[in-house]
Image (cartoon, rainbow, N blue to C red; front, side, top):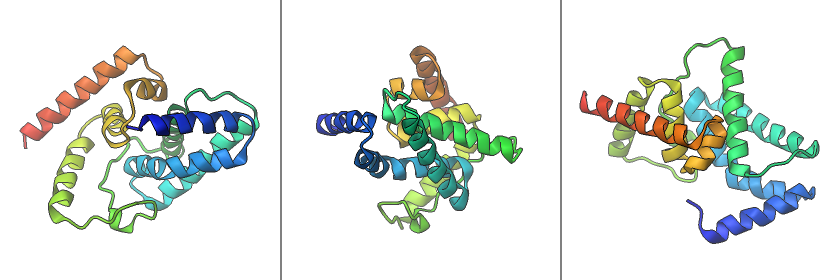
Length: 184
């Protein structure tokens, strides 16, 4: 989670952004590009597609701002745009299933760290294999909560659900994940 200082800085930048400050957009780009890329890459399992989608997502956000449309919560808004872009990608490519594959961070152009610990990779691969067995909605809520570290309120906005429904969905997805890991 963000600290109070980060939250305040983001609110100040959002006000500047609403007034048309392009440097404020650069601030948000720097803050979110890796997170949005990671979110899309986990969902599409293709680095080139994830990079293209990430670029398109930021262009859509920029166009939204140019059209002088309101953004209350930047994190919730950009992840909703990302979610919708991924859905559109699968609709256009007429795929039925949203795959979830292991993201090899050693080749990830947006990654902060290079990981090479075999134990972590094996554990992550096992976890991702279990996630693949879950329905897309469960995968999405778990990724938003535990990978992207978003709040229940933000996830509810992104998924366009009630906060209570989001909590129930998160609880059910965790129970499903636990049952899958216990049934190795």
